[in-house]
Structures are given as C-alpha cells and as structure tokens.
Length: 227
Length: 227
Image (cartoon, rainbow over the protein chains, first blue to last red):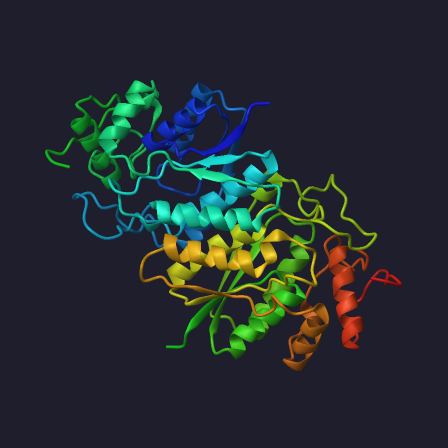
C-alpha cells in the first residue's frame, strides 16, 4: 500500500506546488480545504477542486469553518475591514487571521489520524510572504511536536513544509518546472472574478513571476508598476 | 481593567470546576463551547449556558464544528458505532475523538488573541479519566508552546489545567467546596434526557461521588453496582 499524505490546499500557488511535491515524494494525496468565510471562498474552492483533479487525490475533505467570521479580527473574514492595497508593509498586516494555520494543522492532524497518513504537507512560506507568525518553521515544528504528543501512540505524523525557505520567484520556477497548473490557482485576497493585482497576495505573486522572468497565466484587473 | 481568561466549557463537571477556579483566580471569563455533533450536543449546550450565567461571563462563543462528523472515527460523533457501557478498559476507548483538544485549544487560542486574554483554562484530567492522549500535561505544554510561537508577538497565553493531576473524588470535593452548581452539569456520553449511568463518563462521575462520600444531584437511569 502506498504511503499517504494529507495536503492542505487553499487553491493558491504555494499549496498547489506543495501538493505536487508531495505527489512527487511518492505519497497518495488526501486533499483538505477550508471554507472559513474568506472573501474569495467560492473561487478558492473551485481552484481546490481543479487541483485535486490534477493531483488524482484518493480522498478529499472540504471543511466548513463558520466560526472565523464570529471571531473576526481579520480583513479576510470581516468585510467591514479593508484589505490593504497600497503595497507590502512591515509588521503583521490586517489580513492575518488569528492562529489560522494552528487551527488548520490541528484539523489536518485529526484527519491524518483517521486516514492513517504519515505526513501533512503545508505550503507555508516564511520570508517572502506577508509576515504571518503561523508561517514559520519554528511554529510548524512546535505544532508537529504537539500533534504527536496529543494523538494516539501509533499516530506519528511529519509536517512537511517544502516551500518554507523559498522565495516567490523560486516557487514560480519550481511550479513551472513541475508542470503545476498555475492557471487553476487563485491568490487574490479580495476579488473572485478577476484578480485585483494590488492586494498583498497579488503583489507577492506578480513579483514572483517578474523575478522568475515568466508570465502569470491568470488575468489581473490592474498590474501595479512596482510591487 | 481585570485580566481575562478564555474558559473551554463542555458543560461537564470538570470544565465547570476549572471555570470556577479561573474566576477564583481573579479572571473575567470568556466562555467557549463547541457543538461538534456529539450525541448529547443539546444537553451540553444547555449546561454550558447555565454555567455561563452562574459564572457571569463577559463574553461567550458557541462554536459550530460540523466537520467532526465528516471525520468520524469516534463513537461520540458516529452513531453507527456503539458507546461502550460495560466498564472502563485499558487503552484508548472508541469515544476518543481524534485530536479534539488540539483543535479546541487552537480555536481558543484564536479567540484569546482576539480578546487579548492572557490565559486559557481547560478541565483536562490525566489519570482518573478515559485515557485520551490529548488530556495530558505533556500535550498541553507542547500545545501552549506552539500557540505562543504561532500567534503575534504581543499574544502570550498560558494554558491552565488546574484539574490535570486530580482524581474524580477530589474534583467532586473541590466543586462542592466552591459551590459549583453540579446540578447543571452534564457528563453522560450517550443520552440527553436522563444520564445512562453506564457509559465511561457516567461511571467516572459516579465513582468520583462515591469515593468523595457525596450524592450526585443529577438522576441516572441505572446505577451500576461497580464502576
């Protein structure tokens, strides 16, 4: 029986590449996606399903989490707050969703225990990113340790974060080399029809393509002169 | 401004005592309760609300988690599995819900970050309990460390587990001494009208009362001769 990995797939470029790396590492993939009331929920779900199809996942969990809207405190889930569009700044931006990856990894751990999977893949990027505290290797390592302590003795899960030290340009280059269908991925934080081009996530993506010397296959409403 | 604590309150005896200890420690209490498709969901929610009222909570989060039924793998959420009623056995029983406390603590951490709370109280009991791996102090310590690593720098949360080393008899005695309204609490795993008396949770509770030399204020369908 092939070894199994849970892959957390938002539908963005990073989780797409991370999933294809998991597949390349010889794992059968169980996809996990979270609908948590984020602004682009429908488009991300569509991207997730297209990616699952390309990956040939053996199982898929689409998880509804309504409570993030109850907690709020992030412009991704609270429409009364504005998503920043004037360029990346220092510090934790208001798009940060409190302990999102901690919650996602805990749920992925429960699924890993049920599915008897030996790894969880997550596409966190530490440096060339929005500066979220739940995207660092220090955090992931501690969460892995908590998961292995708090589940059954026979449940031993490795959390793999193949992109953590990569730049966005390297992510674009690797994704193209591995034939990741980037045309299906969705990164924009605020719009679901055409990517805005000016939110932090669009800017990071566009800068990655520019530095990689490649053209992004998706369309943008507006492409800023500088990212 | 008084200091704030998040208290995870299932509505059982342990989380009730843990919450009253938090209050006694000088915290204003933010209650958090999870409806996760457990068999006695309605009755537990009722117990939670009654306890919140007694505690004078300053805020309350009733969190819906539908995905536990999707994951299954536990008789508490999968009605096709049977809740054991013939007495406590060694090993992890089928009432174990995969990484439940990891998930609950991660969500509590997000709420703590939003509410600027400095502590999370959880009523885990390590020894005199069902033997769940997510109820030990080793696990809680590692999860605390992951939470403080994966949230904003200014978010520093202590996870308090005042019951972890207590026996059920000590829990009953402390609860009575602190005037915890045990008549409002609900422990039974399988029934919502009258407690069954024979599931592991009822047996642990009944044994606690017997060893404490006190009478449980709630009614039981059946009280076994031995626990």
